[in-house]
Length: 489
Image (cartoon, rainbow, N blue to C red; front, top):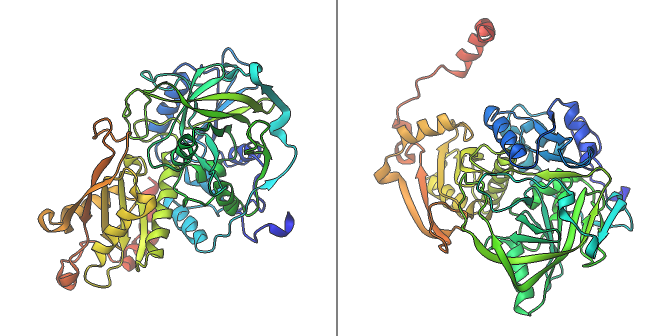
């Protein structure tokens, strides 16, 4: 495998981490891991994550729940894997960032030269330390959290990977979809219309066949980053995550389905989605900050195998009113993907993209450009709104000039207030891709609209636009050199 390793720098770590446990050691090494002992699965873990992430929205720690009452002392739950610039940099192998836009820039730069590394099949791995088969399966042996007070059940799948194989094109898809425990060997798996997993499941169902599936509930955060974001249809997320890793992931074929599971995963469920067998699913507090999807009947998954390591670590991503424990990483990856896609579509002069945390990393996207011609700003708006990474469940797209930091909501708001004339500079696009998690839509309505806001100075008379009242860069640099000590008071 050494001849396949990409020649790349992994920041202060010259090799990628082997698994979640080695990654945790690195995160503890940079001072971004908080260990919480004694929190219960029933609401406590979810509320603690909410408390910490709302108290420290700028740079919160990862949270490792240990000694969970009622469970073996070595069973753990991890929240907030990649919810900081530092943890994202360690995960992706970037140099230490000064801020969130540094990570976006590094991610976007990597995409310019991004080889994929198909998974490497092996016969054994840590995930095979324990295997429960058929009647031995009991999902309640794990500390599955009950996250929000009005949830319809305990959700084992939030920071998960749902592994499925396309029956037509024989490629393996990883998606992050919510998974509720119905009973000891049955779960509900909800996938939004239009998502790759939903499309694959429907192919099996149209032929009257059960859909094979694996659900990883503890794994390398790199896999979670690829699974939870828009990777092109037909591109396997194992290969995509391997590209970021610089080498392939080892995978093992499951006994029941033959699907590949990460050899160093923590907990993996294996079974099949059965056509015609359904159970009520929901409600669930979602990333929009609402219980947005109604209770409905949804196909169930019969779990036939459970693989788990000794002392397993379940990965949790508690959604809810932002900021949540995974929205930061969603914003960074989403921003980089939109940036990459609009540039590949031919848009010049992009200086930055940011999908704001207050919009859950989807609803409020800002693109900064250096205007070069009439219509440049409108082109940026249309491409950012139409890019696959920025299309699902969007709401607002704003374009600003290069002097505006797209990640600084105060500056973006100032540009909107001073450079945008609502009658001239706001357009509405209707009939766009939404879904059941959109709190503004009625049940069954999967379309919404987008506001395209031009908050740039008018290109046609940009030279006549009033100058910004602020110190020149030279004056500010000199002032900081002489008087910067005042900022430390």
